[in-house]
Amino acid sequence: MPFLAVRIPRWFSERFPQAAANLRLNSDRLTTPFDLHETLMDVVDMERSRHVTEGRPRAYSLFQNIPDDRTCADADIEAHWSVSSYRSVQCDNDSCDALIQLDLNESYIRPARGISKSF
Image (cartoon, rainbow, N blue to C red; front, side, top):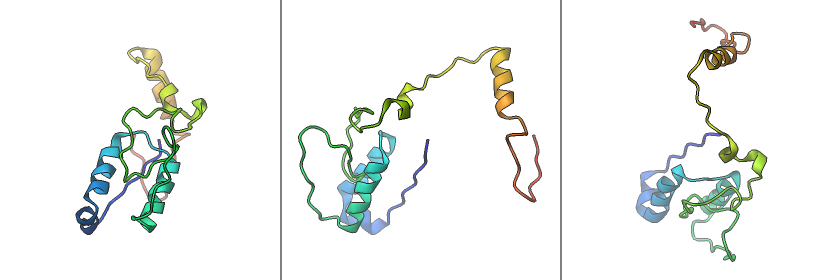
C-alpha cells in the first residue's frame, strides 16, 4: 500500500483543532488520492465552503471526519484495486517457506552501490 506521512505545525493544531483531530482520526481509515486532493484544496483555503452532495461524497478532505465504515464502493474504488479483496494465507508448512524464500531470492534483491549484502 502507498504510504503518506503528514506533519502539521503546532500553530495549525491551535488554529484548527478539529481539522488536526480529524487528520489523526483518519490515519486508520480508508482514504484515496481523491481525498488527498481535497485536503490540498483545504490547505490552499481552509475557509472554503464545501459543496454538499446527497449521500456520501467520492472524496473527503483528510481534515474532515471520514466515516469509519467507508467502503471501496463508497470511494469509487474498483474491485480489482480494492485491498479488501486480498486474503490472508495461513502459512505453516514447508511449501509456504519455499515461497517466501523464492520472494527473497537474491536475483530479485539488488543492494545499493557501496552497501554490503548480508543475508
